[in-house]
Amino acid sequence: MLRSLICVVCAAAVAACATPGAVAPGTTEAQLRAQFGRPTAQHALEAGAKRLEYLTGPFQQTKYMIDIDANGRVQRVEQVLTYEKFARLRIGVDDRAVVLREFGIPFYEQTYPLSGLTAWMYPYKENGIWNSEMAVYFDRHGIVRKVESGPDPRFLRNGKDRDR
Image 1 (cartoon, rainbow, N blue to C red):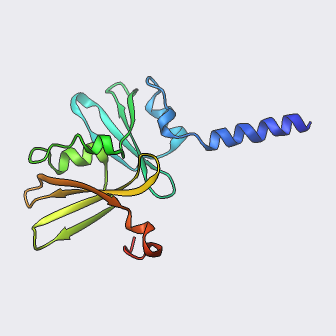
Image 2: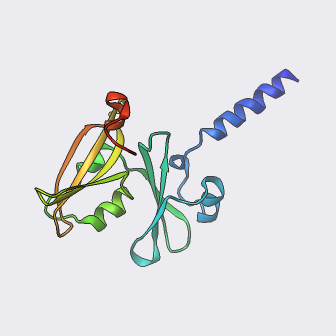
Image 3: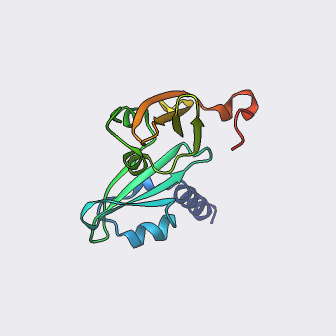
């Protein structure tokens, strides 16, 4: 009896830890939504495909982008809030649409009137350790002008650096 109870508790714990990152290619969109619910956002891709955005974690530092083909099956799953992924952004080439498609809805947006830039902030765990925030800066035309990482203000001075 005790052994059965332990097995049930362990199975429940493993199921509770399931993340969209564990979804296998070929899974149907219906199965994905049944397991993880409604995505944070949805982005159109070419040829009838789409990208589903799933924000996870208590500090919103993990975001999975799941590509669904025109037949409604998972093609690719990627955790996108990483330094390496942000480093692929092309300064002077990529725009808001590319950033939105690749990284999803920003956690916070800040406008800097003197420079004419607007930054989209994305919290992430740098190297799996540091509570960091990536800022992607756009000019007035929506073109990426710079990308920089720094400490997440929510973890500085008792998190009083930002209202969110």
